[in-house]
Amino acid sequence: MRVAVVGGGVSGLTAAYRLRTLLGPDAAITVCESSGELGGKLRTVELAGAACDVGAEAFLARRPEALDLVHELGLADRLRHPSGASSTVRAGGRTVALPKRTVMGVPAAADAVSSVLSETGCAAVAGESRLPPVGPVGDDVSLGALLRNRLGDEVVDRLVDPLLGGVYAGGADGLGLRAVLPALANALDGGAESVTSAIAALLPDPAAPPNPAPVFGTLSGGLATLISELAARAEAELRSGVPVRALSPRDGGWRLTFGAVAAAHAPAAPDLDVDAVVLAVPAPAAARLLADVAPAAAAAYGEVELASMAVVGLALPPGTALPDSSGVLIGAGEHTCEGGRFTAKAFTFSARKWPHQSDPDGPVLLRGSVGRFGDPSALRATDDELVRRVRADLAELTGITADPVAARVQRWGGGLPQYGVGHRDRVARIEAAVSALPGIAVAGAALHGVGIPACIGTGDAAARRVAAQVAVGS
Image: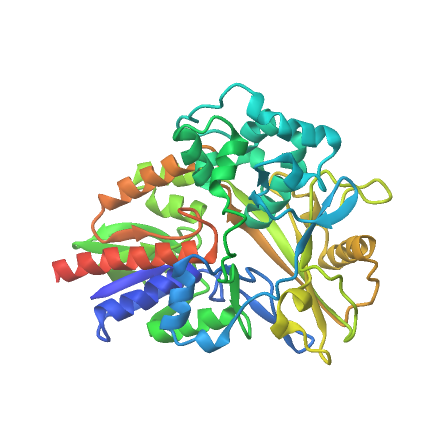
């Protein structure tokens, strides 16, 4: 049994590992990764002797996929959870606590967000229930358009956009309600007459005991630990440093052709003939590989837009005092004291957020995030300039001016898919077209969620699909 997994991120490596558990030791599994490094957007570097994640830094622990995989791999002793320090948001020129009783920043009542909104903004929220009923949202709508129409601009600009910026690097106006806030869409479809009443029904009863389960988790030593363990357990051959250029049917299976472009001379790597393929690559690569064999899927992948971003990791001298919060989110419309825009869209005070990173004798770690969908200007700066700008933002927001003992800029070009209006329909078209191809399955962040648990889920499901097909055909 021969299976290729195209893409060495967490989705692809989950698929490779699951294939090994399903197909056994004799299966020939090959992971094809165009770059020279496994892990995709899970990357851990050493910063002043400390492990620092410069891609994703945590996973949602209240979804089962990542947590279950950590336990299955025997990594539970490395599991770590946040300290409980609150988050803050820069809103209206002030840094205030992030309101708690909201759903992705959308409130059920004005009093929940009075610390963030102006009197005018609070009045818009308070009056939303007196507007005409919102009604079902149809196939899909822009989340930003819906919220601006019902709750006013301030809720979007000061709360929803900063929160979404950390997940998608995009704002609510360009994202679809059904993919980003499906629970709200379902509530409106079910008869909720206002956004605030729908959110109120989604929030837990304030009188009920709080859920003791941590919301987020990570691994000591960094999330690259998960990548290393998946790669080791998969026991797959690795072809790295050269992209898969073409995918074509061959003798009841599939042929993978390697090389950046077609050339008359010998290819950069020999063709690979397999019984099945898992495609766990970004949307543009998936569209290119499926163009001839599943044009409908390729067309749908081609509609997925991407955002670029960068993470600036800073290691400050031991003993540097951080704010009491876990971090600060910054809206796109916020201004510096000089009237310009902040380069950073968020800071994570890692040494405050994660107890295992708060060594009093070690460097004080924090991360600045840069990059918003549709606005690549900040990312045009050199690494040194980006560090300078992020440090200037940090100084204005927190008063911290200490020179870092180490810094690292990690750029993620086209790293985050945008779940625009109609995204669920796109995914349905992709999966319907691919399901007609024997021995092909797709996975990755462009499908059912950009977070680690969702990516793990798509990789696991793709592996199970092709393993079942290979087993039947063997």
